[in-house]
Amino acid sequence: MVELKKYFSKFLRNRKKIVSEKDLFLTKELNKILGTEIQNIQFYKEAFSLKSHKQTDNNNYERLEFLGDSVLGSIISCYIFKTYPKSNEGFLTQLKSKIVNRKNLNKIGEELGLKKWIQNHSTSTLSENITGNLFEAFVGAIFLDLGYEKCNEIVFNKLLTPEDIAKLERKIISYKSLLLEWSQKKKSTIRYETSEEHHPSKVVVFRCVVWLDNRNISNATDSSKKKAEEKAAQRAFYALNKKQNILEQNKNNTPIKF
Image (cartoon, rainbow, N blue to C red; front, side):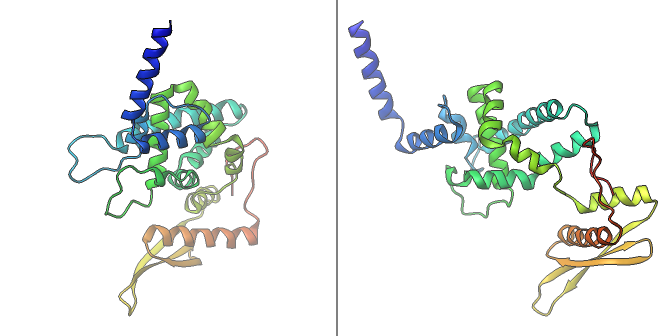
């Protein structure tokens, strides 16, 4: 027994020498944020590795992002199905969309500070969605390392709490979608006219005008067509809601209506 203890002590000392200080630091940080000990650091190193132009293999976050997206979708779907037993499919779909949409995942990734764990910083500009992508890859790594049940537990205890989900219930993600839903129920027509504007400084902006039937109800400009239309839709929504009090929410947790 004594000899066996000596053997394992020597084995562990040698193992620590093999593991780099960088890996030990990452392991310590991950253990702290997850509230449990990780088993295989390699999964997490891959989750925080960027794709290189010279890279010939797939050892970067993209495959784990694909996996994490599916795992997270399953975990969230099961949670809201059990939490809202009287809600219809439309409400469940909307709430899930609010939770897993890119903007919300980016926010979670930013709050967790995932970019500081990137293993191979690139000189190229990072995507505006990199923190959300890394978060999904992180979930994929947790799933592979600790299993589905533990991953489920960690998501709701450490990464995306029930309190966070409750706050998203009434949050409006797309004003365009809500205006479209309202106009269809009112048998009215909402349309967007978007054009480019070239300024003297050679900056191109997009101007969007929102029409309700034949009436101009709002306009906005922004750096992209999509942003301009969403901003104009938001202004149209508040203008209409102020006059008509069109925003309602059913007591049975059905989707927000106009």
